[in-house]
Length: 409
Image (cartoon, rainbow, N blue to C red):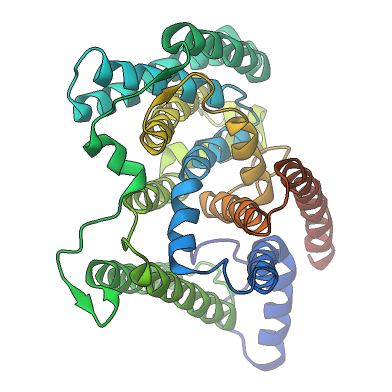
């Protein structure tokens, strides 16, 4: 969440003008609030349909662990799509790098920590390969990454064969274990989890208030105060509730939650507060204008795919760790999950619009759907059907919300 997101109202308004400004703001940000409301409705619905089992503490921890790969890949996919590209190779890249990672530890006896960083570096090299063809040769990303999907899936099958097992316990703990509870318990609540939740809430409040004050000092437009406070309260309550549930779970805070949380914060900052992030939005909004403005589009495009490769390496480590082995068939449909999460989270099909936090919401919507349907015993084929319908509905909602936003201007 960012106080600097879509801003449409001067900060000196009272009475009727404040109410009108709030209505206008909500109309122009229908997507952002709509998707959060949809996520809440889905959670409540499955909580009822599963007789309360969806939000069992252990299920919440499992939800995070099972969907970590989507969250990681969706972060990079948002950047790719905002720049008017697509990456169809990430699932195959995850299988290829995951297989290499397993081979390094099981057959080549490389220390697990070295294997982790080597895997991420290999992901960066894969990104360089894709970025070169897209940025400097000019081949459309759809074609390059489609070729990459076939290439790296073939390499994964060739290198791994079927399965490479016998990985170190410390490596497997990355995606399957939780942070050790070095602070003890407060009643039945994990002390470390409580501390992390409190620090997260305090940090969120301080950064949001600071960002709003900075906008006010520079006489920039602010979102209505009522909307700002309401949004902040909702996020604080959500973090507090998730903290409570995780503190009651068997292990506490999953290790992958820390990894995903750091990535979300880092990339939200990159997209919202750096020159690189602004250049991505500029290219996606109007490529010709970005070039005329001096944006080095080739370099930016290259770095976008390098970044996607690095995140694919991280996702490969997490996926291999959770499986406890390198599997040639790993990563199937991962690219579709990441793309769907980005679109459901509000990333525009035409580029130029999209947020990391939106992709997180999109990934959570899909994750809750998967878990809820699984708890209900719904066949996997129907789960895919539901996800497809949700994706189509999300894009339709995006189009309608944009029309309403334009109508309020």
